[in-house]
Amino acid sequence: MGVRAQQKEKTRRALVDAAFNQLSAERSFSSLSLREVAREAGIAPTSFYRHFKDMNELGLTMVDEGGLTLRQMMRKGRQRAEAGGSVIRISVDTFIEVLESNPNVFRILLHERSGTSAAFRAAVEREIEHFISELAHYTEAQANRTPDLARAQAEALVILVFNAGASALDIKRSERKALADQLVLQLRMVATGAEALQQKMDNRA
Amino acid sequence: MGVRAQQKEKTRRALVDAAFNQLSAERSFSSLSLREVAREAGIAPTSFYRHFKDMNELGLTMVDEGGLTLRQMMRKGRQRAEAGGSVIRISVDTFIEVLESNPNVFRILLHERSGTSAAFRAAVEREIEHFISELAHYTEAQANRTPDLARAQAEALVILVFNAGASALDIKRSERKALADQLVLQLRMVATGAEALQQKMDNRA
DNA sequence: AAGTTGAGCGTACATTTGTACGCTAATTTA
DNA sequence: TAAATTAGCGTACAAATGTACGCTCAACTT
Image 1 (cartoon, rainbow over the protein chains, first blue to last red):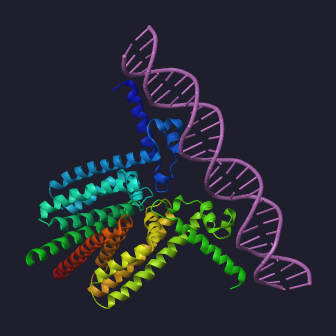
Image 2 (tube, rainbow over the protein chains, first blue to last red):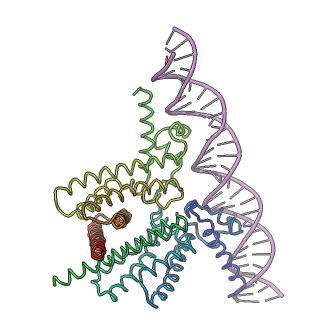
């Protein structure tokens, strides 16, 4: 890659990072202005356009990148689970760790999921869908579920996890353990219930 | 109430209604400006301050009012359920109806739940908590659950319902039936799973 | 009847925002 | 080496925003 393209990439990264860094509990993506982001990245406002058509395009990039990061980290966690132990427990613990080290990735996903732009909502939904279908596939094979039951189960699990994530962002670290325990309990409910419903169906046939 | 206070109340209502009316899939509360709301309500921007300290105060009023509306409507639905039939099915159907006739109430609750203002998040959480504890209380008595199991179950149910609400806002009416069916299935999973876990605990004692 | 209160208004201003336009200087291409 | 491309900048401007200030006049109080 030429010197020029390299520098451009560097500036682009600076923009994305600047935007991520400005996110916080008090600051959502949609409240960021183009000028603020450019300022933080150390470039002139008008130079922003050399990299993104508008703030929307930046935001979609962030959602995609964030989702990717998340999936990569969760995948590592799943490898840990293969060594043995409760899949649910290990997944929840991994999730909490990921959340603690990437809070702003979660903020943008959680907030824009119910956001004001259809494109954003769709992008977030796409990321969540990745999780759901990966999990559904896993359950279908592992626990011998009907496809639509597996799907409903996976969706419920993912929703509960993400939701707990939203709460976790707002509480002290010490309270997070209790939250994780409750989440584990809820996930077990879903798994157990799905199993029971599956058997009832099987018996009927 | 005097003529004056009456007029004041009327204007205040106009402001709240104006704000609610401006909400949509493309417009969140935090994207509304004081001037826009005042314009829609038919008063001068500066007169806004005769009623609310700032937009934040207006928003909190909307959350409280919205939550109240919701609970009142769901309560009516519960009365319907007492006549017999599946509690889950009837509750879900009621919920969908409520959502369809008050979409903007949901929008503000769903969006500000992951919003930028701690006060808003707390207010929404308070409203959701009402639902959870009402339901937990009901389940504890009805199904003879341990308090903390009842709590975890109720929370899971409410989360799944609200979450489906968020999706429902974004889809065509015809697709909502499938969504409702899937939601019912998920709620049954939780209920069945909770029951199974409860029995396992009881047997152990 | 006289005095007080307060809802609503108009004017005004400083800030911030997005973005159009044209330049510069360094890199890339031919 | 000459020409073309382009990342980044500075200037500029129109639009919108929140809110301070002081006025009016109808409603209320005494």
